[in-house]
Every structure is written in C-alpha cells, then in structure tokens.
Length: 115
Length: 109
Image (cartoon, rainbow over all chains, first blue to last red; front, side, top):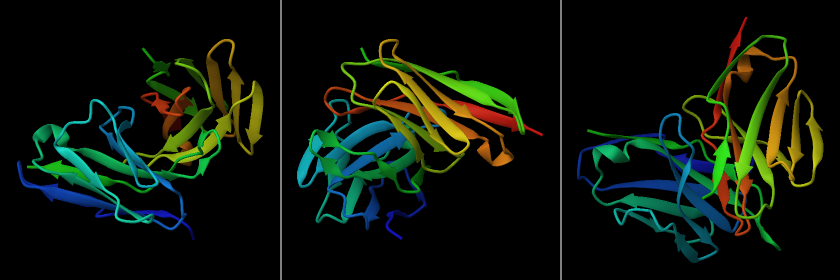
C-alpha cells in the first residue's frame, strides 16, 4: 500500500543533543511537509518542499533544519533541542496540481521527548 | 489575521448524531478539509469541500457555506471508535493550510 512512513515513532533525546527524524513516502508526491504539534493544539507548519524548492515558515526557529535528498525521503534535524521542542512531529505529503497542492496525507508521527 | 474556530470539546452518546461546527476568517479560500485524529496518532483525511453544500460519505457528512465562513461535520450512528479529535483546516489564497485546534469528541455508551 502506498503510504507515508516516519521513523522512529518515539524518540528520546537529551537537552542540547542533536536529533534527526526521518520521513519516507511511496505515494510519489512532490510536496512534503513537516509539522510540529503539541497537545490539544493545531499542527504548526515548520517548512515544506515543493519538489526540491525549500519553503521555510517565517516563525520556524533556526534550530530546525530540513533536507530532502530525493523525492521519497525528507529529514528534520533539530540542532539543539530544548524542553520546548518536545512535541509530535508530523510529516505529510501531497500531490501538486495546477492551482496548488492537493490533499495532505500524514505519516504516523514521531513523538519527541527531551530530557 | 487568519483564524479557525471550533469548540474545544463535545460529548455525545453512542448511536446518536453529533454536529461539529467550524467558522473561519482567512485570506482567500481554496477549500476546507476535515481530518480525524485519534490520541497520539496522525491526522487522517475525512472530507473536502470547496463548493457550498453538503458532501456525504457514509456516516460522515460535511457542509460548507462560503458566504458565512462556516462549515460543519456531521457524524451519524456514533460508535465508540469515533472518539477522537476532529480538525478543520482551510486552504487560503496562497494554498497554505490554516488549521483549527481541533474538537475533542467524547462518545459515551
């Protein structure tokens, strides 16, 4: 089945220790997104790729970086995690159509704990 | 600014019907989405409305009125597995998704 996969599902890191979260997709969608979601809050878009074109949200901290080496994979790097970065990180993909991206489909998420 | 409003929490009884409302103020409109999110899991796509009216999908229906900036999600024949958060999201003129904080639906036997 075509899907969005995130690894790991649960990640524990120490304050200040870099961590990388990964996302892969078999949907062959050319748009990929990273969201941060805290409990009972709306998902917050961090950045997205339109093919190789990287789009950073204005309020995404510099602490967060992303890489997309090919269509299928996307990585979220948190350079120096703080306690406030503990959250669920969601990867989503969509197909780009004329007029704009289509419906977004989400992976299962990675829950990050910062000790 | 852009804003999506939904009730924080609702309670309903198994087998009943519940309507979850969503109002929005956004810079332009290019469609409204409803997602279901079970606790600790990712959102899953439920429905999409871009024209006024009702879209029906089995037990779930979604309604849109663009002139009123209003949508609702109607869930019929409620089951315990419908206990989840329901998120409303609007795509603005830049095709960015603006998300509501979600409505937590609690189903009681």
